[in-house]
Amino acid sequence: MSEITNFKGVAQKTTAESQSDAMVATLLKRVGERVRKARELKGIPRRVLSEISGVSPRYLAQLESGEGNISIGLLQKVAVALDYRIEWLVGAEDPWSSDTMRVADLFRRAGFHTRQKVIDLLSPDTETDMRASRICLIGLRGAGKSTLGAMAGERLGVPFVELNREIEEQSGMPVNELLAFYGQEGYRKLEAQALERVIATHDAMILAVAGGIVADPQTYNMLLAHFHTVWLKAEPEDHMERVLAQGDTRPMGGNPEAMDQLKSILTSREALYGRASSQVDTSGRSLEETLDDLIGVIGERGFLR
Image (cartoon, rainbow, N blue to C red; front, side):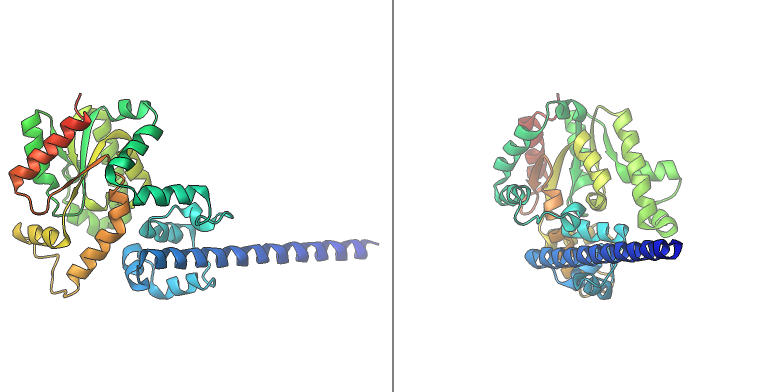
């Protein structure tokens, strides 16, 4: 009798394992199909997605075919690079046929002012209190965040802070050395800690942050919740020209594909930058004209109480 019982137990265990394996295979297939579909909808080649996410092209190919058993950490990097929530890639509900995805699509295609009305309508009143009179300038390197932030701070009589300078002051070493020692992951942790300190010590300020802060969902959400954000937009050529004008030749660095890479990064981050409270286009505008535009937005939106 005990042998029969043991046999039944083994059989039940084997059946359970088979069912579990089948569920995992279904999940991997679903994730692969959604990653591929999301990438194709955005028009991003696998090579570009690899550069943005840091996941190798070969592994991405395995993932999209349903054969890659990807870790949560790597899948999060892929999701951020595609500007998708990770649960959209793994959930049982098809994001492309759900009401949530439909609303998100309508939101993306709407004009800026319409999107801002939707945000204001859906945002709780407590968000305004959390933001106080803090203003943050976001955008790619070369957008003019430091220059315009300092000028706006002086004109409006509020402190101007660069988050990277905060990080350097607390760590005791330049950002370049921090990246060399601790890598991007270590730098992002220090960035989040610096942002928390700034929020705790300033109720009114203008802050300039690194362009890649949007790549960390948790830090970026904290930024959006505690600051009135302004996206300083510019054409890729303007970004590159301004950085080179500052005497920094690293963006080119003998790399003929530098401009293409910059355009890819800008394209991949547009939706994230688009979550800002407001935006100011700096291309084709003089420094004084752009400053007037920025001051105008701050006044019209009531960012400073």
